[in-house]
Amino acid sequence: MLIFIIGYMGAGKTTLGKHLAERLNYRFYDMDEMFEISTGHSIGSFFEKFGEAAFRQKEREILYNHLDDRQTVIATGGGTACYADNMVLMNQKGITVYVDTGFDTIMKRLAGKIHNRPMLKHISHEQLPSFIRDHMNTRHEFYSKAAIKVDGDEVKLDELLRNFVPNKPSQLL
Image 1 (cartoon, one colour):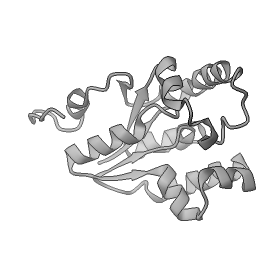
Image 2 (cartoon, rainbow, N blue to C red):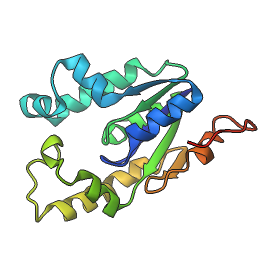
Image 3 (cartoon, rainbow, N blue to C red):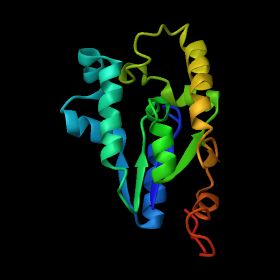
Image 4 (cartoon, rainbow, N blue to C red):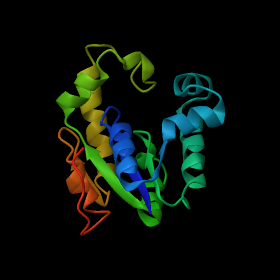
């Protein structure tokens, strides 16, 4: 089984993906890490040097190269589900899990980390809340196509695990 974790930046995709992979005894990949290894660039430097369109194409290539993986959990980038037909591909080839995290939680998690986020680094501090709220709303259209939705403010891993291991008792985290 191939599981894709999707959601907005700061939603908790990597954390959830690691826990889920560990509990299922699956491999775990973080698309941001795979991107940086593949290109030899940080995401920020790649964005600055080549632009968002080139970034999205490379990200899609990495996604495409893993569509036949098995027993794998992949935490995608925040925009992966929103580019081209990536969401359709992920739903066809695996199970998508949307980590739906509230605006306030996202803002807290991103506080002080804006310079690490290419989409946010040129947004003024005053404009940041409205930008993030609008951006989250725009991306929700894509995220809502996920097969499974979890509350990113209070993830219940045992409940999520029931989607993948029915009738098997699970241990608490």
